Amino acid sequence: MKEIKVTTKEKLQILDITEEIEETISGVNEGVVVAYVPHTTAAITIQEHDTELWEDLLNAYQKLVPIKGNYKHNAKYSGMPSEQNAHSHILSSMIKPFILIPVVNDQLQLGTWQKILFIELDGGRHRTVKLLTISKGDEKP
Amino acid sequence: MKEIKVTTKEKLQILDITEEIEETISGVNEGVVVAYVPHTTAAITIQEHDTELWEDLLNAYQKLVPIKGNYKHNAKYSGMPSEQNAHSHILSSMIKPFILIPVVNDQLQLGTWQKILFIELDGGRHRTVKLLTISKGDEKP
Amino acid sequence: MKEIKVTTKEKLQILDITEEIEETISGVNEGVVVAYVPHTTAAITIQEHDTELWEDLLNAYQKLVPIKGNYKHNAKYSGMPSEQNAHSHILSSMIKPFILIPVVNDQLQLGTWQKILFIELDGGRHRTVKLLTISKGDEKP
Image (cartoon, rainbow over all chains, first blue to last red; front, side, top):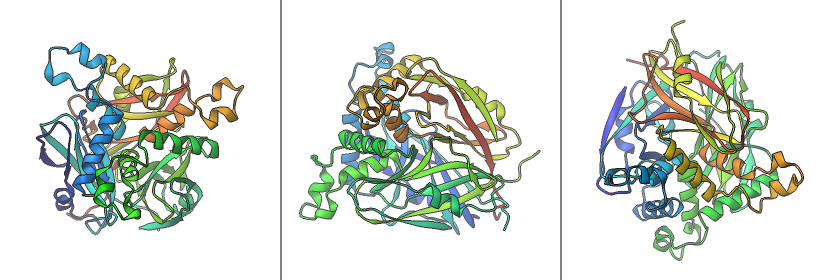
């Protein structure tokens, strides 16, 4: 399975990883690419490449699930600054760590404005995104 | 790849597209169907066909991410009424523009109450949903 | 298609079903497993196995979409205690009833801390999770 590496610097940060993913796709006549984030404090989605909008996304996520809150996970690990991150787990559980996109002739079938966005929710960190293509199987004609 | 067309009339609107999708499925012994929305201001999900519930869904989405807010995306495009839609991008980034459902003998394996719902978040517009089936590949017996 | 059975006891409850799912996987050299919940008042996600965190998740979900609210679905079925569950439909429409995870040599390619979590949003109930593996198809070398 292929994978790409991502490095984040901010606590919450969005990175456009469309090109890196598209470059890995080969040999797919018709199928899908799956991008899978093997982390519990990050997520992945599909949206526009618009840095002002990205601020809106991250502001909205934090408004919905504040970084500072009365979290049992954080209390259990009080004294461990790196574990004061319940907000990132909660957001990751909702936005989820995978996407899939149709592929035709090795080209992502994204809409005009769609890009693949890695969502860091507890950075900065070194992150991995696993990539797998699946072609249409043997279907009856 | 197959696709269906959807036309919405309301700013926020839910449409049941289960039948249109099921009609496109053929030749799949066992696999999945992927429904993919190539838009950044709409989404797709799986839920009941209950118009009162649909009002609850849309009310809840708007309560979580208000249409009117202090959004940088909207400010950047102030004066452009069609771009005052940060709320729709944020909701689409969370609900996401794809679903997948198991298929057996060309039949969607939905639960008793499940239907496929297109979620318009910035209508009315003409929309597309791309459809792809993937059958089980050659697995060892 | 394979499936596993889950029994919940609480109104909102999280169950780790990673092992049950992993045991069903066989014959997959490289591909994905799809876990699909055929219910409209439950969901499925990927997160840590940490019971304190699970309380945080369920508390956050309820804060975002309160169990008691001015819901049209609940009003339509007033007098039916089992249908006072609009919150569970709304949350299920956002968190969604499916996941997919890469598989190599029949092993889930989960990250170090990732587990597969069934999310009961309107229990206690008897629930089903449908499971399907899809191997990579015939791709050009």
